[in-house]
Image (cartoon, rainbow, N blue to C red):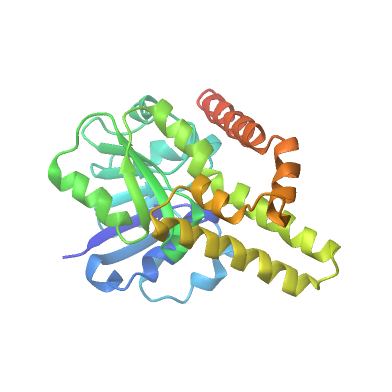
Length: 270
């Protein structure tokens, strides 16, 4: 029998999860029921008519205890929301950033199994990156249940500490925004050379997509592939010189460290 999942919250990440689940090729076999628990529905209109989802406003309206209750809410809302679920004994997953495992232990039943996860929004198109963390080694059944929630949604792996998950948050959790920013800047550069907004954006998307697939399938490092394209005294070499003057490596490192620092700060807020 398939899993039953209650999704608490349906903002950007909750919606991405829902889209990913509903479009998996084996979704009907893997998932028996979905409930989405949100106080208001205005922001999730596209999903209101899907017959596979029960929309409710509080956990008291659940007709049964779900196999999984997944929190996809902002970290500062958790202290208000979690006490509503203390009577449930089930597998809990939270995709909220910053809050350590110990934070959840103060609000949920001691007999519940709890896992932190850090996905990113491309899982909505089954191209996500997801990290998992539990306080103790999960028994095989619970570990399989966690992985079944995300299998087919992208690349997933387990980490060993809250600190590791904060690092993942800064890297792959926030990472799509870094890539979107680079695509945005590439498209703007194309417009500056006289191309239309539409063509500029498509060139940017196609270039990033093609390069990503190429590096994945080539078996070579990005550095090696870059060297192959960068002929001495050529056009690419001139562009790379500009990026090196801007110290792109250092800039990216500093950006990730700033996100990591912010993830650590979230543990003490709210």
